Image (cartoon, rainbow, N blue to C red; front, top):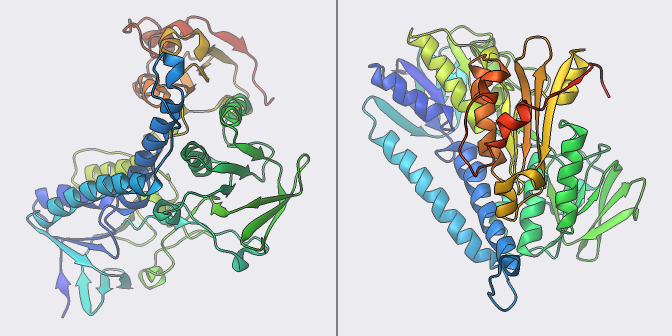
Length: 463
């Protein structure tokens, strides 16, 4: 005999608990299934632990720079990695416990621990228990992707999850992957005291960003003595005694890098391969992402997919927005679509990169006539006063409609300052609305109206 619910949610990541709260508040009975830890990637092995450790790394970095501010702390600054992990674990536990308490006290919500697997399009088995519902929501997230590199099976390696539990500071950390996750860990561990080398297959790090953004971040990393090897072809791995050797045919530098630890940071894959999706008629693409429409409905009636597993976004905020779209549409309070949202994210190197909308390269590729405003952080008083003047700000405007197309803010507070631009984009207001808005002094954001008053017209076409 199956247990029936008004809704079944598979996965307790960013979207799952919030959806359970909204549905139960509407009077529905909900079964929320989680096979591992409440909170999913973000709380347990993603944003919460990594940004907590980034904060520790920044504290060490600022302590080493204390003399620049006229502060004498004396002695050599050192980092106790076990103590960093204790702090990280406490922050994670507090966040997860808060979610667990909320869910366990939620009227109408039954929380189940175990692996869910579809039996039919409206039934799921968890252990020996069969659950049925006409509404099933998949929120199973993703995990680090392990690349097929020659020799990978012969050496120990770390992922973005396992490195969070590493108790011993690497003497020399080799990071394979020069994109968002890899660069955050590279700077973090360099500030902890490790020697760090980043190996990137593409001609430059974070190749999805504009070339000037990539170059500026490279300069920041190199200023902290992080070695970056780009255009690395045929990456191969092997042992040399207790060391790990990464071979890379690069245009410059030694053909092999010898290190003590290896971190693989080459992307993620969805956790969809053990759900029995074929039994429910849920279609996936060649990478395993669940195919969804603009309202996050799958190919099977009555089944939705939210979060990282649907390929529509790889961030906590996109997962939460997925919840908002589904809940709003399901409960009849509005019509919301994935295509309505503006891409936005941050890269949490220090200083951070805040991004909204298109890159300059994307706008040029569309053949638009664009107007660009930019300013280095060295010309922003707040950044200079704080002694953090690395980076720059750039805003892209459509030359015909005056709409803001995108922004890249690399610098102190960039992850916060970009939201003012994002809000104007969301309101579909012309750039002049922001240009004519008075901002507070001294802040980083106050220079955004100034930048918008100094736009220069650029013809379309890739460069």
